[in-house]
Each structure stands twice: as structure tokens, then as C-alpha cells.
Length: 248
Image (cartoon, rainbow, N blue to C red; front, side, top):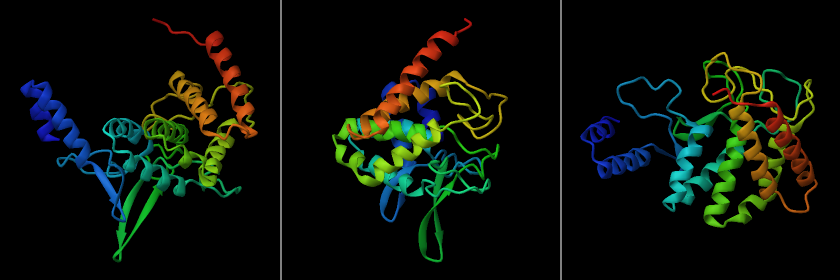
């Protein structure tokens, strides 16, 4: 981090880019000998808190950079491991992650000479709110990986198709509101603390739209979910174009 700051103040674009790539490489974490993601922060001057974890939304940015450099293996491993962490059991326990929820973050835990992944669904976040955006970012990462590598077979695996549908079930389920947009609790997106932003923020609706587009491409063409997703896309597009405005 100090090296990156030094390069920035030196004003050399080449040095800054090289330092940025090196910082990204240094942030990569491994699980069972394979790279699986990037930690949120490696600042040696500050206590890690929960920033020693790999956040799904943060890794979306890292994934795009890694794919541009041909490092698809890391992104593939991330997708596989986070899919394994997805909450898949249907239950009525309000203290457990809902079915289909993707973790906000995960970390590699070493205990008694063993290594495993620990997922956080909001329990350790400052706001103590489950993330509404992690599944949406996961769909975008999967779509970017498929486009960059041509590895469509990964998305077409049965477990990935089920994971995509579970995210869609969570997002498209009937709720108390009668809008095609996604209702967002305070602290459930962007950053893990309450900021007085809730309801139907525009950035989440844009992310929701993009994730639905990604899902429509990733699902098998004959799947029953495809027309459902396309119908919601039409409703969402109409609603945002007619009921949202920018006060500039």
C-alpha cells in the first residue's frame, strides 16, 4: 500500500499501473493450494477487522482485471468455492441465511492443521444485515468469466444452473410490495454499514437489471426460468424509465 502511494505521488503513470497490478497480485489468497480470490485490504498500518476477507462485491472489480490479464483460473475457483458456500437449505429460521443467498464475504481459516472457508452472510458486518447484492455480483462475475474464457460448460453444469435459479428465486419471489424493482434494507448493499439509504436505490436497480440480463444468457435456452426473467426485465425497464428521474 505504501509503495502504491509512493508511485502515485511520483506521478509516473507506468510505475503507478505496475504498482497497482502488483498490489492486486499481493492481495490474492489461496485455498488448498489454489488461488480463490482477493482480500479487501492489505494495509499494514491498520487493523484488519473483517477486511482480511474476500468480499463478493469487491472481487467483481478484481475479477474483471484478472480476466483482462488472462488469469481466468482465479475467477473460476472463486465461482466454484462461493457456489459451494451459497445457502441452499429452505427453512423458517430467521437467524439463518435465506435459501439462495450468496455470502457477503469469505475467508480462509486455518485450524488444527486444517484449512476451510468461513462464509459471512452479514453476521460480522457492522450493519448486521444480509447482503442483497452479493448474488447479483456473482451472476455478473460468472457471465464475465464465460465471455472472457469461452468456458460455457461451467455455467451449464447442473450445480451452477441450480445456483443461478436459487439467486433468481430469492430476487423474484413475491413480496409485500407490488413493484418490479428490488426492495433494499439499509446497510444491505455497497458497504457493510447503515448509511440511511433504503427503499429502491437506483444503483441496485441497475445492478438488478444487469444481473437478470446475465442470468438470461447463462441459463439453458429451454429452461422455464428464461421467460420469467425476460418478463421481469420488461417490467423493470418500463418502471425505471417512467418512475425514476435524476435531479441534476
